[in-house]
Length: 379
Ligand SMILES: *Cc1c(COP(=O)(O)O)cnc(C)c1O
Image (cartoon, rainbow, N blue to C red; front, side, top):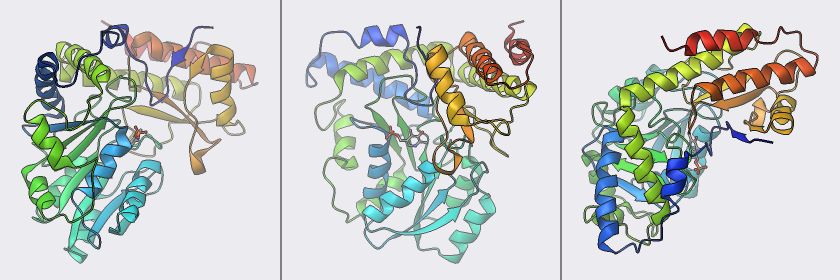
């Protein structure tokens, strides 16, 4: 059976990237590697839309999140985090691990944070030193209004805007510098269509000033050490050299396509999937702010989303994702990230129709596919 990876991470990797990673291992202090890092560094700045250094860490995305707490906040400091899903919740857990006191804005799953709530929380407690948010909350398929929240946070000199863009950067517009985002995190295996194992973090001047005051204990994720290294086109410890070769290829392909073209293509895929599902009576889970990166789809009344997700895999070789925690059995999720194109979206819609039909769901096969085709049709 042919396999299709349509999960919102890890995502499918292109043959070009896979082949580039098959090159012989470079020594991480060799001149060729220094040259490679110099190129990759510039391409990452292009991707992040920033003039800041972008750190390259050998870790998954969570390592980037952890470092974004441990490098800027000291025990006893206060942070505000937006909790509208599994990844928002993780900010709270990391802060707790570092003795950082937290204020939480709980957002109903499937909804976006109201920027006015952030404004009110900061007004009430101006000692808050960071606001932690997700650009795309992968567990619910919602994109929070990062730009609007950042406009509030930037008025507080001692408060950083920290954005987990792990499933956003490279799929839709996230403007690090223009929107005054102080710390922005991305990861390899979602939007960048690489195997897991790299995290990227950009840090503003304001962020570095706050890092100077941080008394927290840290070692591996010491961002200042990584900054000093990346300025010399190095990493502090052994770089994940093969992954960085893959990264170079992935970024090269992204630059060739162009940021705007990528954003438009991904948005069209997400729209085709969403409307294809609606055409067969399946609603998209988010009530507002549906993310382009991942489409969370509610199972029809009386049908188990876990069974749909399982049948996609067992019958048709498609790996999607189920729902997490309270959404388990209620939603399944399809990625619009990774090495995917028009016919992956069609495949997803067609397979979901077939799985549902076999379960007894009343449907005229091809209904959703037709709608998706109309949207994807290149004129
Ligand atoms: C996947 C993901 C993470 C965690 O990344 P890992 O690479 O699994 O550590 C964090 N935030 C978001 C929004 C994600 O999608």
